[in-house]
Image (cartoon, rainbow over all chains, first blue to last red; front, side):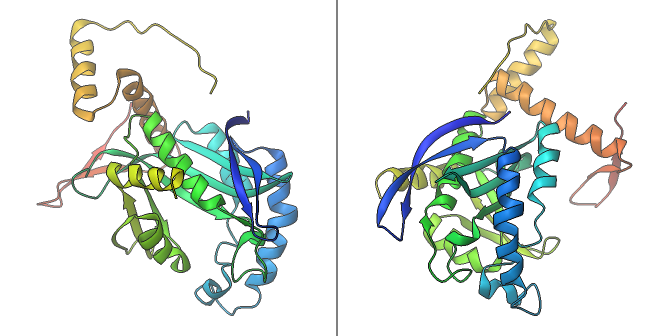
Length: 209
Length: 69
């Protein structure tokens, strides 16, 4: 059942004002409907502008095939998976699926538990290169902070990790403060990890930008 | 988050193991049991779906199949 994690603020780029938003755990049918009826058509339309998956990075639409509904339903049965959403203005502004059964690769935490971010996406109308005037800023950052908070709650000291789509690599490395660990040949994506200290710095920066 | 409580009865040997593991992993005993359940569910579901799980020795690349009863 969907649960409130906390109240947050999202910056509306159109008005320059912060708007009340909320983070919820275990996404539900309303989020599924948002994805199917609002996210997917925009993403698929943008994806069609490009010949192949690699080129779609230029339109920030490489995730147009992600099956959020199927993954979220699977996550309901799995103790090791959780889904989260940021909701604002009555709609889903960001989605995240995490896996709690992975282990760190980076020294000095190699082999320790972490929260692995399996999927993370902002609504297409919030993305540069997908739409001309993206609306809300901050959904992705809030969801990363949520993953860190979950990691702390579970006794993992804030450690998190993810594989990045090409267009987001520099943001994770240079803005969010992840360590760019390696190119993962199995996933064909770069693998990033955040240590406990990096997670603490991210949260500090989030609270005192 | 909704939570329910249960009492876990362990013998001394098992409790000592739980204490040591929790200390080694830097986790509370509750967090450790929750994590153990997550991993157990993940492993058993994969095996029930027909997957095989192996442990590989990094030096020799020798693989041992993990059997779950």
